[in-house]
Structure formats: structure tokens, C-alpha cells
Image (cartoon, rainbow, N blue to C red; front, top):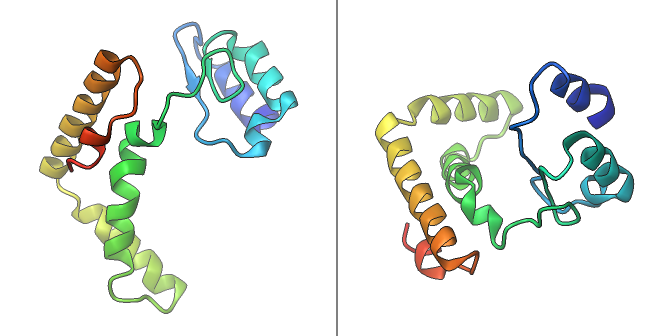
Length: 133
């Protein structure tokens, strides 16, 4: 995937300003061959458990998709217990379409406060932010 899709796509862009953060610690993502390939491509702009820039502590709490969207969408998608794939897909489309800009603005405000806290605390855990939402 990285060799056939990601790196060729990177070659179509100016990557000098690009930072890449791996999303999890899955072994296929942190295997030495994968990390070496990404380091060769991105240099010191790789954020990973085994990369030049270490993965931030509690980083899932820094990603709006992780700390908000997936849980919110899942709770509404499964509320009526879909029994078929079509029903599930319809629910997903409906829930995503119903998300209003005002809700996303609040999520971004919360995300900004999380980033401010991380900067001020120099990367320490942030329980007062995490449980505030």
C-alpha cells in the first residue's frame, strides 16, 4: 500500500512541508521495513512510535475523528439496530449528512483548547480537557 499508492502520490506533491503522523501502533505500520521506507521518503518529518518524532502522548485525544466523530456517529447509526448492510449504510449516510456546521465549530474549539493545553504543558496528559466535553 505504501509503496504502490502512498509514495507515488507523495511524488506528485511538494513534500518539504509535509509531516506524516501514523495513526496507530499496529505492527504492520511500525515494522522496521515500513518505518525505514517512510524515513527514506519523509526524513525527520515522520511522527511515529518508532520514527524520528515520537508519537504524542494520548494522541487519540488530539484527533477530532477519534475523540468525537466516530463515537457520535456510531451511537446514532446503531440506535435503531440496523439488520442489513443497506440499512447500516443508509444510517451512516443520514447521520453524516445531519452533522451541522455549528457542531463542527464546537469540535474545532475543543480541539484548539486541547492543542493549547498540550503546548503549555509540554506534552503531559490532559485529563481536565479530555473529560470536559
